Structures are given as structure tokens and as C-alpha cells.
Image (cartoon, rainbow, N blue to C red):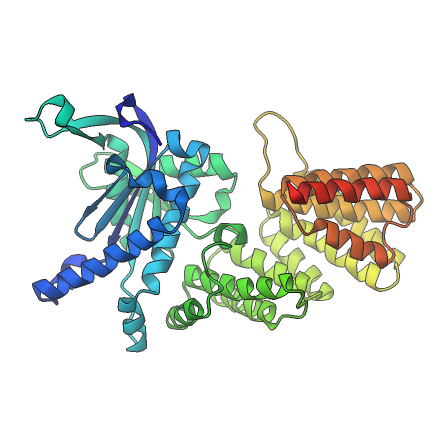
Length: 450
């Protein structure tokens, strides 16, 4: 845990408060409002106490409550180069826990809107300050002070102009998040906005949610949580944040079935249905998370023809979408394998996989890939390997397969070994010799254990 006596500290500040709390307070008696705030405080405590990763936040100088406002400081000294991404994880968990609170459940049952929470996030350097002034130094506590904290607080006001998650990042936090994750596509640019007390405009970004890995441990598969998310989406069908949360709920249920070896789970279909409805009805360009989940559901359901068409459609709309490019090739490849090694489909798959490799397999100073791109390259090299093996280009096949394994390990694909074994049984990779194949599978299983 970071020592506040270290002077200047780098951190990500998170401000979370209840939307229109003043208006809400006017409708409550003093005692009732106190109970309302107490419920909100309990929700925050439950989230923070529920995971040891938030223990550094419990230090007195790293959190505070002011009425309906909760403030948390995630210090680089505690969280390394993940403070911005973990700040968004904390904000999302707090929002989800508040959605399913008794207060909001009761409101939804009465056909009312939930009481939202607004979140402002910023990153920067702050200083430790001692207080109160009148006490001897040994009796004084410390607090964190600095301009980045003010920006995070002011960024909350931009939530009134937000259209989805109501999680707003000031430009410094956005840049830090992209530096940490290499995922700039997870945001909607709200614009350069005036913030109270500041002479210059500040660029602000609304977070639209991450991939499944971001949400996998959020308890979204819980059935009672699902009822709340279904109601939220039904009441707000043009909100991509609510659509994504519900789709991830269904996908979480499907993944539970898959790991229980239930391969034909109906929950994949339900997740795909939410994604498709949202993609057809929400007039936004920044819906990659929903597109990604939709394509994944089609893949798991082995809908190869539709997957190929939808993937090409998604890649045409967004030429930076590595997953869509790779899944186009993957759909042709799987259709070719399932059809008894159809050469024409496998050749087209090989060509499309080459497109993915050419566009996205870039290495060099300052060039890094996110997990989505690594998975896309795993699939692309796998497709190329299978075709090269069929064409008796054994050395090229082994080289492509080796590259596929490296990308699978980089993306931490713990299911890759199972997938390759199933494809081998269906006739893929026939030209790869037994010893090379055993070495490849050993590498994959070792990576999965790691």
C-alpha cells in the first residue's frame, strides 16, 4: 500500500454520486433521506469489501464520502500501470450493484426509471497535504490534493450530456486508459466541454464498456441481476450500455453452460438476439462491443454462413476491427472443414486470413496489440496453417501453426488446445507431422496452465 508521505503521487481519481440527489432529498423527510444514503453507502462498502484488489482504496487518504458522493483514488504505487482500467472496473461494479439495490428494484417494479449514478474519472499527479492545520505534525492526517482531482469532480457534470453509461473520462484519463489497454474504440467522444471553474475546454469521453473479459467476474450471470437488466433494457432500448450489460448477462449464462459441457446452450442465441436488435435499432457508429459479442455468439453456434456475412459487414463498416476480419476467414475455413475439406472455401479462407495478417500482425517500437487482435491473429494463422498443410507446404504450415500458438498464448486463450484437437479430428492440419503436432499442443496446454 502506498505511503502518502512520499510527496507527489500519480493516481486515477473516481468520483461517483447519485444523479439529481438534491431533487431526491427534497422528496424525503430527513430520516428517510438518511436511510436512502445509508443504503447507497452500504452498496459501495459491499463492492469495496468484496474484493481484496480494492484494499488500497480503504486507506483514509484514498477514499471519502461526502453525502451521496463517493471518492476513490487508485494510486500508481498500488496499482501500477492499471489504475485507469481498474478505475473503470470499480465504477462499473458500483453502478451494477446500485442497479440491483432494493431502492432501484422497487422503482423498476413500479415502472419507474432507476436512479442513476454519475461517474467522473481523471488521471494525473497530486500532492499529499497534512491537516488539520492547528495540530502537531504527529497528530495530523493526510489528504490528496491537486488539479487532476478537480477535473475528475467537474467531469461528472458532463454526465448530463451522456447517452449511455454516464461514466465520463477527462482527456488525461482517456489517454491513460488507451495506453494501458490499447483499446480506443470503447468510447464515444462527447466533445470539448466547459467544466465549472475552468477557463479552457476539456475533451471528454463516455465509456461504452469493454469486452467480455472486462465483465466476466462481475456476477452478471446471476438470474436476479438478469431480471433487473432485462427491465432496464426494455425501458431504454436505444441505450447501448444497457443492451451490452444484458447481452453479457446472457453470454455469461451461456459460458457457464459451455464450461459445464453443455454445447448447445440457448443463452448464446439470446445474447445474439439482443446484440442484433441493438445493432439494428441504435443509430450509433461506436457499437463494436455489441458487434463483437454478436459475432462470437454466431461462432459458438456454428452459424458459419451468417457469421461470414456479418463479419464482412462489420469489417467494412470498421476497417480497424481485427476480430471481424479474422472471423470472415474463420467462417469460410470452418465451412470448408465441416464440408469435408472443400478446397474452394479453404482457399478463400486462406486469402482472407492473409488480409488479416497483413493488416494487423504489426510489430515494432510502440506497436502493441490488445487481446482481441491477438485472438484474431491466432485464428488467421491457424487458417493459413491448415490450408498450407493441405497443399503439402509442411514447413510453412508448421511456421503458421507456431505463430498461431504464440498469439493464443498472448491472448491467454485457455480453450485453444481443445479447439485445435477438435479441428484435427475433423481433418484439418493433415500435413503437420505427429511430432510437430505434439509440440504445438504441449505449448498450448502449458500456456493455459500458466
